[in-house]
Length: 310
Image (cartoon, rainbow, N blue to C red; front, side):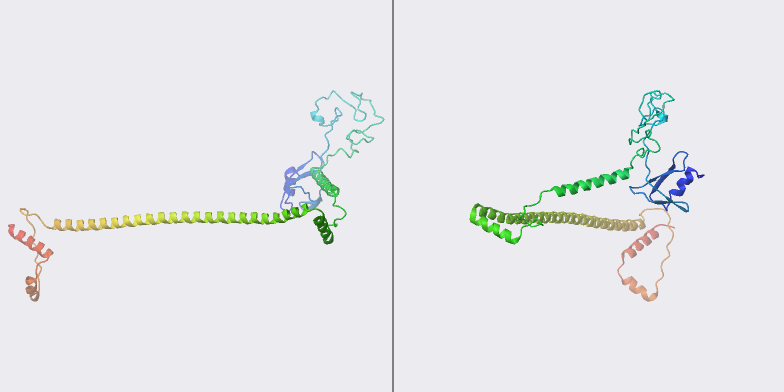
């Protein structure tokens, strides 16, 4: 395989393989380990334009070939000087030592421990262990159901009595024991009690709902009253603003009229005002009409102008 790790990751982790998360090479081999999302592993995977078969990755049990013990690798061996034989378990064997009857400590076969021939050197994957555990749980549940005691022989196979048997049992119990009648009466009363309890519970729920509705109505009415009071306050403020605006406008009109009337006794010369010409037909009516406010002001101005020398 000439592809780099980045190229392998790009070829595998793509849209055609939606459950893949990451891909890595195992050392210098041509085997690629792929991490999937979830507990299911696909049988085939797309690598570029090819379909490659996949299988569950089984991790090997760590074996130290330096000291001959299980549980760690050769590069992290804590006691490289303390050695044992992988076949017979002899401590600190010589270099010329040869095992005549080797025995694997994993599977008990006639080979060295964790040899290539040993099938027990691989760990069982988590998915396989989970499936086995689920099957074991199902089997235990089935065994418990089978071991449960069945009803007596006079019962029907479904676990219920037949009508004839129930009638016979009732007649016998009525004739023999008077206490059975009282027990039946109690049993007959119990359903009515349960019904009354249910009805009481339903009534309580309805009462709670009605109370909740009343509380909501009261809250809504309070809110409406608050809104009405706020609207009344706003209207009163608007009326006050209108009255104030009217009074200010009237004061402005009076001040304008006062400015037009000059003060008496002034010695400053004023320009002669041109007298408006009126047609002859309207002179008599104008002279006979009562003077208005503007006319009175104009007459006073003319008198003042006449009194002032040129």
